[in-house]
Image (tube, rainbow, N blue to C red; front, side):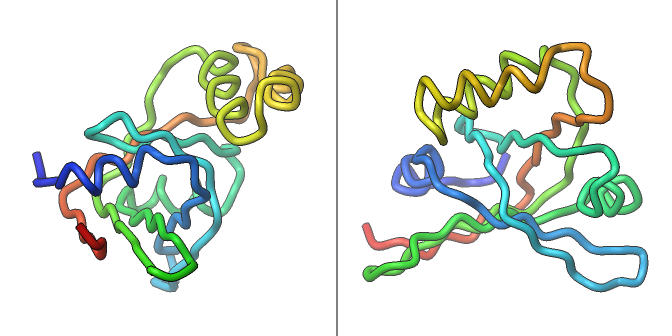
Length: 137
């Protein structure tokens, strides 16, 4: 397990849009905004199985997740590591995350599009092997 300061743990636990970076088969980086959930040890995300990010991760299961605050004082935490697909109930996972990002009404409505039997959606976790903190304590 990698070292993570209490300040970084609190920062990652806030509701922010992150940027997930993967590497394609052409060795070019691909970065996209993404929702995430931090549990204190791992970042959890979901995506479509046919997206470029998941195709990249299926070929090369390493990624970085940059969570940053873009107003002074600028702060960021970058989590790098291996990605692993996980199996858990899709609807509850998406609903919890959607409520976090959209609020209870809009989030619950959004999650209706993600029943547990929906095909073509992947839930995955980023297992950190390095964390880079740029935070003021």
